[in-house]
Image 1 (cartoon, rainbow, N blue to C red):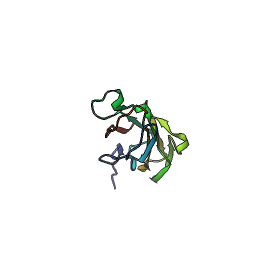
Image 2: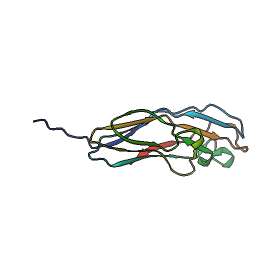
Image 3: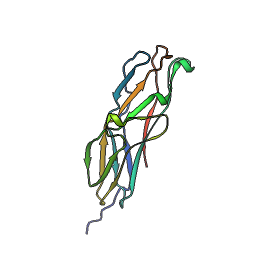
Image 4: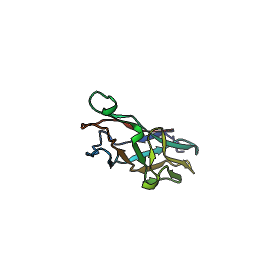
Length: 150
């Protein structure tokens, strides 16, 4: 007799460290890939999952208004699946650049559901697009883009 135990976990893995978007002049946009994001669903049953993305404001210097690029000036698109294993459905939140959404509020990056008890993994490589406001001062801006899954 073989006893199989399921880890019964739902996890998300994102690249560690920071992403350098480069530089852009005011009234211009800059974009870059955030690297590969992977959701692994080894829960028992076939419950759905949703991965979401949020952002903070991007600031430099004192953080005053001219030193801030608001999260509403950050946009995101998940892109298509880049790798997958296991059976089930997977739906990108923003499959193409034409589907880009503002990060002013939390957005759905990807969703899925297993169709069997086998572990399912889903990967994608999202892109972030930042619009530099006309009032922005020169500087190195930092902010946080976070993914979570439930």
